[in-house]
Length: 147
Image (cartoon, rainbow, N blue to C red; front, side):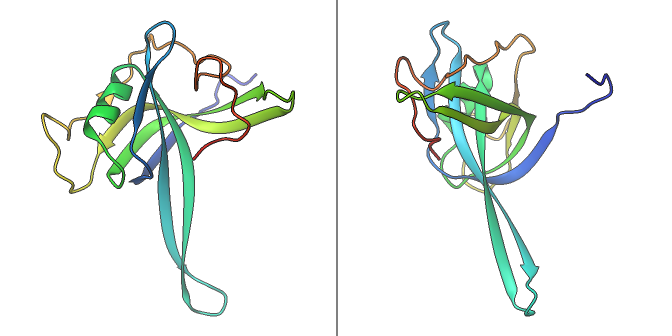
């Protein structure tokens, strides 16, 4: 393992659906969102083209509560975090995996009105617990990664 490696993700994009707040068995807040990033470029034929990428974001603790309480679908946000890949077996025994961004900071950037300090960013506490092997629900397994 290299000592001089970096796992850092910085995104600016729009939230794809209303954030849903859940709590893990240890009462840690958890919010999952998808964020769209888009780019425009000229294609080989000279026409303007747009490309959108969707990113799965996992948020814990006070940051998760902030996102669920103050942000909504369509908000433009800045996300600072790290990449994580998880694997699990679905109920049919098929091995599944997903790569997601574990957010450390989420900052609203858009022009949608925010209430009670919704334009402030909130940073994760360094003591944030590591996610469980399948933190997306009590006993329910996911056959597909929901976006």
